[in-house]
Length: 340
Image 1 (tube, rainbow, N blue to C red):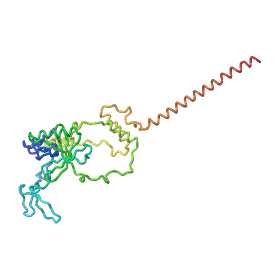
Image 2: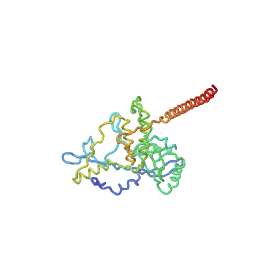
Image 3: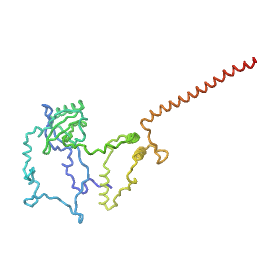
Image 4: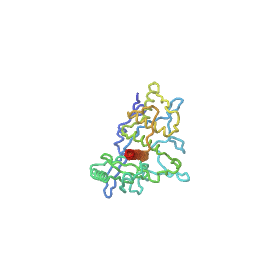
């Protein structure tokens, strides 16, 4: 039994159902002297399950109320604004009009600043994704021009834009027949990797690399569309069971006997398990996994085979010489005996 999507939550309105087609920002793409009116649309949505906080004793909802510290009373949303807190703790009010009047060319424009190969972008920088929709019939022609130019160049566009009170960096690329934009973190927002990697004294052997290669090859590739959220489904089943009074599912007992210390054994077992999951026959003897040959085994075995052949042919030649040496001697001694 699976819990319905709207159980325990307020029913979504028709406007919420159309979230993916409702624009969150209107502006234009600045492509040199070409201006393309566009609408910004969310390209992703979250399917995670949300929980409410309750009072454990009686199940009552725990809610947060916005209270003014000076008046000690709850205030409405339309009474709330934003402010910047100074170093001395003073609050400096900032209005939406203040932010909207900033002298920035990106206030209502996605300004393209460069075109670069897609592999130039570090995946660590990639943030929220959006779809850019042509806003109106006149925008269709320049929109299509930019889309086809991106396709033919096999590059992505780097742009600057302002959204939700800050200027951001973006990357424009083509998805199907739509221009998509990924928000990018600024380079100085990416933390350095100092102190994250393990000690440099750790090394791995060729045998371990060979088994890792074999495991990677056995696992192969996967279609991301075939993957799904097992945790979310398990939570849905748990909630449904509790709501209907049924027995709740339990996690299976761990199969391992603790942490595996032998890396080679763990790799070998992983390769076998991956092969069995793909329907391949397991090894003849259960529990006896033969290690894969090392990468340089073939090159070392060749000279041994050649040296073996040389010794064999040498022995044959030696035997031949001994045989040919005895035959002439026998022929010479016979005439001498007759003459005597």
